Image (cartoon, rainbow, N blue to C red; front, side, top):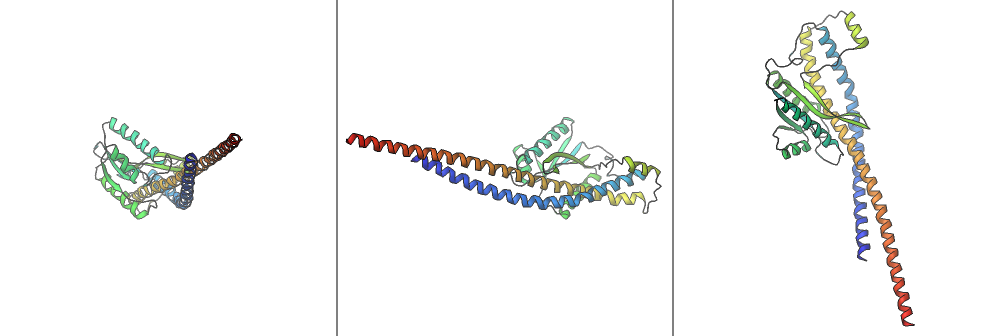
Amino acid sequence: MAQLREIKKRMGAVKTIQRITKTMQMIATAKFTASLARAKNSRPYTDTIRGLVSQVAAQAGETRHPLLEGPARATNRELVLVLTSDRGLCGAYNSNVLRTVSRLMAELKAQGREVVVETSGRKATAYFKFQKVDVAVRHAVGDRPQYDAVEKIAQSYIDRYVAGEFDSIKVVYMRFISAARQRPEVMQLLPLSLPKVEGEQKAAGRSANYEFSPAPSELLDELLPRSVKVSLFQAFLDSVVSENVMRMVAMKAATDNAGGIGRNLKRSYNRARQARITTELNEIVAGAEALN
């Protein structure tokens, strides 16, 4: 009897867990759909402005800009921004990002560089606290990044980089490629690395004679900071999409596993109940025979 009660209690607990994971899966699906739309809508603008900056920089001749070059005096200091989630239960999302940043920091320290860490997401903050690594700044952007908040972060990076505080600024995040593929990536935010103009665009650029108004330096002063800001904003958007899709997959797997455990427990319960009934029948038959 005690065994039956224990199995029934476990069946109730598994059903409760299954309902919770199913609800979390539905919430993650809704959030994934909304965040995917935001990321897809911003991607063409990000790619277009980076391509435009590349063309202007390629045709500007000897025009220089501090955001495209390293600092005049090396400081041996690197700033690394780590983007993770505030909550768990999203599969290997956080562990993959943190493993990537750990490798990056080990490489930079092996080169004799000082690494300054900034985080966005409580999971990254908790990880570095456990590793006894000081976190310079903890950004609270949330799971619905707003451009104004990210723009302030990017502008502070631009100002500090131009002032010569760091040799480079990198962002470690989970890049969203498709619903079935997400990849942890290290993006060099500054100095800005521009995509190369290739193929037909490159041939057209060589044959074209551009006239700039205003001057190329003024155009770069406007376009380069904007490119930095939208690139960082896109990284935040990709991180949120990746988090939601990985949580959706993880909760679906948990729901399916809970269903399988529930079926196994129900089978065990039926077997135990049948064994108890058989035992009771045997005891009744044995008692009747003893009376005769």
